Amino acid sequence: MITAPGWVNIDASWNAWLAKHPWVRSVLSALRVVPPSKLDIPWSPDLMIHDVRKPLPFADNFMTAVYASHLLEHLYLDETHRLLGECLRVLQPGGVLRVVVPDLQAIVREYLGEGPFHSSRCGTSGVTSADRMNQRLLLRTPQTPSGNLLYRIYAAIKDFHSHKWMYDATSLASHLRSAGFVEVHEMALHESCIAGIEEVEDPSRVLNGEGFCVEGVKPQDPA
Image 1 (tube, rainbow, N blue to C red):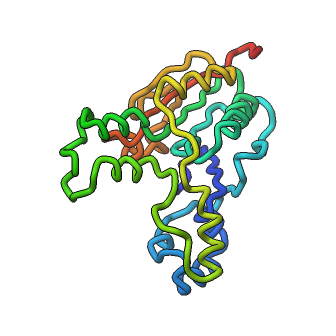
Image 2: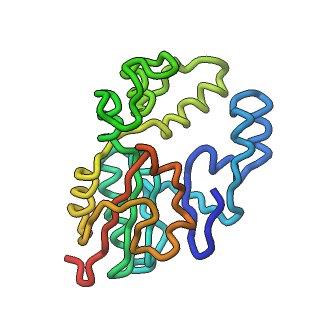
Image 3: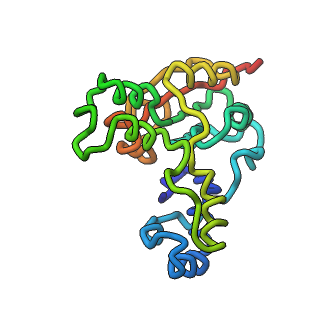
């Protein structure tokens, strides 16, 4: 979660908020509301807390590039449409939007036994293909919210981390075009029109069927 030079990291997740308030994070960890492992996540001190479902806090034609990794799947589709419109607004003409999301096609192929990462119908650990697909879709947690009041509040807030809408490359590219982007293409890991993309793109979020990348360009004369 460390921001590369020249980039602005925007996040409004529960974990990001706790990073800005370490004493709250420590208390909730001591109460076993937040797993201790969350304490080890490094965050940049210049992290900007902002809910991307609201207008982005930047002027028109301000950014040369926008990068969103494993974000859109956490938004409802209408929220995604609004965010894509905001990305178009803040980008300079010729600016690039790069989006990485979980690969719905890879998840389905794995379930059907057609993907390169599928081992058997029950998998190597005895987990069935259906259960594995549900784990990867992450539409909801498998446990009923329970525990003390603090944990229930935490679970309700944490629901943002569940997935609301999933994409394959064709559907995501279509949404970018509908938002007004041109030259929309699926791209490989670290293949990008954005200089220095390898500084911010985590291979573990793309390789082995974990995700795919799509880029679009703001037209020079947007309609």
